[in-house]
Image (cartoon, rainbow, N blue to C red; front, side):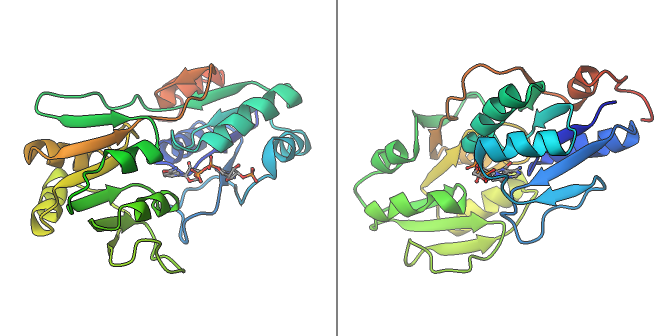
Length: 249
Ligand code: NAP
């Protein structure tokens, strides 16, 4: 009997949750609990960390999980590494559902860097207006370049003081549109964009808008996760789980 665990927190994971429900596949959905109001879906849900790879392996055994789908964000590297280790320890198969990274299109002015520290270094020394379109847990290193006027965009208003005094904060979950992000960048006279290569459609509006405005984008590459089975579509996950993707659709 199949019983899947979805490591979620992404639009992809929620689309998978809906498909599993339609296909009547038994599954549990796991959120880290980062956002105050996670997007709703109809699968049984648990919230919060497992306690490392060991904790996840214990959960897999105790909840009789037969398959794990890692549908976390491509930058949720710790969770993804833990999933590899825990599934090996518990002896259950793991599949990653991960959208392909964005690739450079004509007109893009990308400066590709490997991590946050390199992104900070790639910003100019002269004061500039910067759209820092990255998660709130990654903004602190930019305090090393306090001369810039930063615009931030978070899903939730932060509980604590921002490590970037003077930064302008937009609280919005999206979805974002190219037109909306064009207006944002024009209104705020943005000169530089810092983004992570998330891939997919949900976050690409800022990349399309930056191309239209010929703005330089400091594009942070995905963390290296090593070899693991990976697919890009919900249907491929259903096939892997041994069900017809069209069942109940
Ligand atoms: P991370 O750094 O890889 O994970 C840190 C720890 O958070 C993990 O070791 C785990 O704690 C817990 N965790 C992460 N995802 C979890 C999940 N789905 N269920 C239960 N525990 C989870 O992850 P992150 O970058 O902070 O992302 C956290 C969540 O936000 C993920 O679910 C991700 O899909 C979602 N998200 C992230 C981003 C992003 O930009 N990184 C963007 C959109 C959505 P334990 O070790 O205690 O198990």
